[in-house]
Length: 149
Image 1 (tube, rainbow, N blue to C red):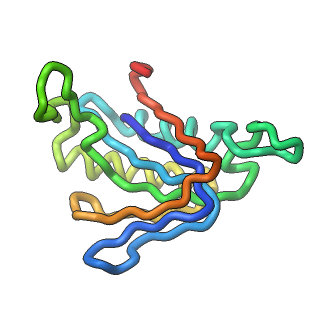
Image 2: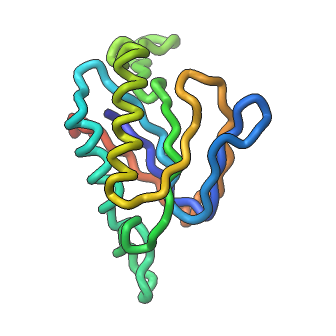
Image 3: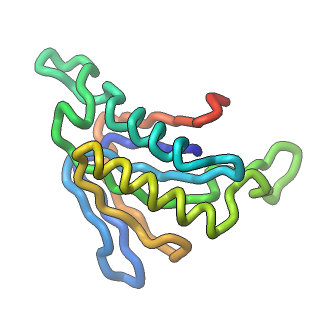
């Protein structure tokens, strides 16, 4: 799995011009499922994200987690995080999961976040979406379950 995590003051996702998911302070998470991912990968990624210490404490140091701040997550599936454009101009998405596996593990990721006590809003899997957010900081973190970065 790959994730782009942005600390936000608010974020929302629109489908067909209508708000489908919206949060106030928390994390905007663009999440992609890889071909080799499993339900364990989804749970591990959720656990990592909610415990990342990327929110300011009282001394303005980045030292608090999403759980500490009681923030929410806007989780949006984005297979293009597996786009490989090395040596070419048109990205290859060969490492992204099939739509069936991608949807299943995206939904498992959302369930894992909720099981950790996080309020989660979502996009719509395989829909054309418009994402709006206010990046706070800005703070943006990249995660890869294979620890490639």
